[in-house]
Length: 198
Image (cartoon, rainbow, N blue to C red):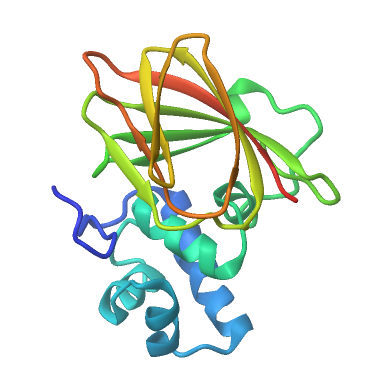
């Protein structure tokens, strides 16, 4: 199913993590004392989509979570970590949180989830050929990212500058505006991102 313009896939949730995310999104809005209308205005996501996401009626896409993380000043890993127990110092591969956005073909693994007092985290991403994941703004302005391609080819756009990265290439940048991750193919791309909050 295609993603709607405001970041919802329209797919009902089946993943337990999605249900926990729905609850946490509702809690965050409550903590900020924002109405659905105010959050819609701040995020650019429709009121109805926000309501359905908070009630667990739809599975949030990477685009939708990206917009909400930007409004709430969190990285996606921080948001995901808030719906789980405090992470251990050693995170076994089998215990790493994997989140899938079926609408965009994006699979995200929290290799080293964020911890209290720590500023860096490592994320592994996989995009199928043709997948395109835009973010309107970073969750934390000035956030540092190191994007390292492990297999395949990734087009990473920062602002208006597109970088074509092949296996082994690494791009280091600070994020202030929009970004886009795209897999030009012919096969999928697997990459790691080191995120460092300012």
